[in-house]
Image 1 (tube, rainbow, N blue to C red):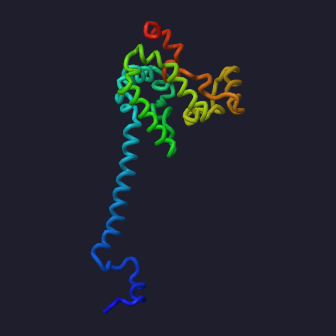
Image 2 (image 1 turned 45 degrees about the horizontal axis):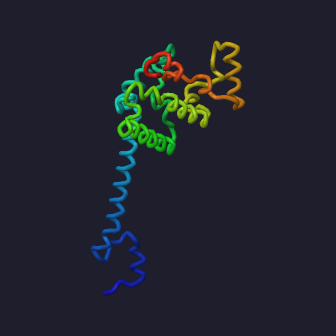
Length: 203
């Protein structure tokens, strides 16, 4: 007996399909949901795994040999407050989609220079590009008003400042300057510091 319009309406979208081929619609939707959830959680896990100091230290030869040791000798690694600022704290935004965009760009850029061009594979090559690499990071920090620095450091809460430091920190509130304009070698050697430490590689 053919199904009348009232019965079809009552059955709605949750009724059993009249032909087995229509089962593909809900099954396809369920499969898309599962794949989407797996991709979302998998991406999140990958982002967290590649944001650790251990990963940053060993993913690339240049990081392990040149960048990581400098950080371990810096005030961001060991200081009287006992607070350690890791790689992601300074270089990776906390918010999405900025976090994903920055990590993707950095991964492609670092991988290209490390594994394809080999342009930072030796101390000499690394030092030849240090100023360029540092300036790119500093420009990013200026563009976002040293956002990473400000997650830990609050200018208004600094204690025991010199008069000059107090004046300079006051200028930050007016937008004339930002953290990186004065503090350019706190986690890695600034180019002028590296030139003194590695004169042979900087010639």
